[in-house]
Amino acid sequence: MTRARWSLLLAALPLAACGSTQALKPAAGEQLPAAPYGAPATPTVADLLTPSVQERPQRNSEIMTRSHERQNDAFDLPPS
Image (cartoon, rainbow, N blue to C red; front, side, top):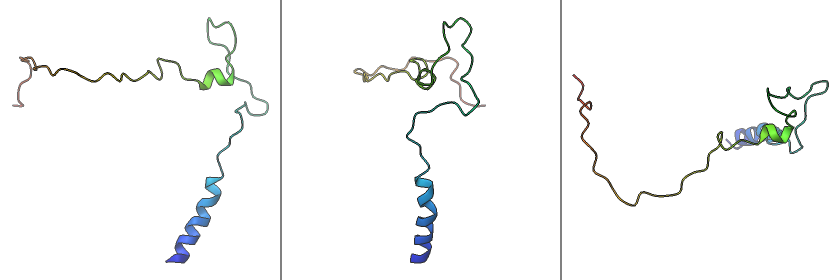
């Protein structure tokens, strides 16, 4: 059983080293995408990787302070 664990560990070790910490850049011979219509300039790599507020909204940390009685819904019918 220990031999199987060691072989699994040795197989997973190269996968752990796959991550790159270098800055991203286009592949050789490739360019960044063209500037969007109406944009003054082509966005940089950092601009493309940074999500906008609409893509990643902030969470609302306000908790509900009062409970409310549910209103009657005429269309909330049981299945027939």
